[in-house]
Length: 177
Image (cartoon, rainbow, N blue to C red; front, side, top):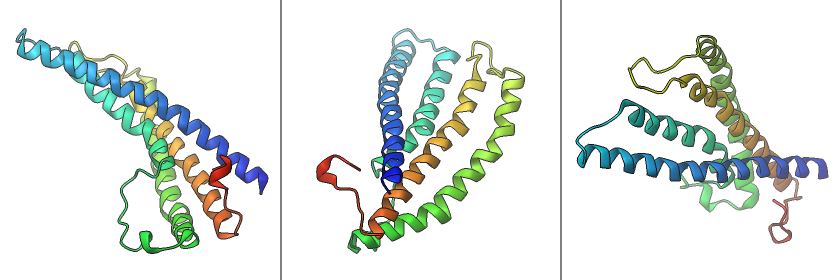
């Protein structure tokens, strides 16, 4: 069981690190949007590159930050029943959700995205618009990368849920999670 807890903590560390990096990318998005707004309203001009950079960065944030959001329990959930359950009941809901919904759905998207990403890399896909971003294939590579982060975070959540069900819940006061 100690190995499972160490694995879970390692996964949590990876997504914590990625989440912190992604938080800085959100700052970059604010700067890019600010520049775009100033260019449009002050200088009456706009660039395709800037507009594409906005949605590329937004996509990056959501794809790469989803595992971190799962780590922090920040995904939307209807808590009508869940919130009334005790720790073991919540652990059962989480474990069943991970095994039957999260992992199969994420694995399906991961597998089906591989050919899509491969084809994009094979042609070094860029923007079809003049002045657009020439590295669209990099953004598309974030699809399997982001879903990998969600998958491994789902494994971590499943481990923690299993340990809770078995009465070996990680002690929140000791720093272990």
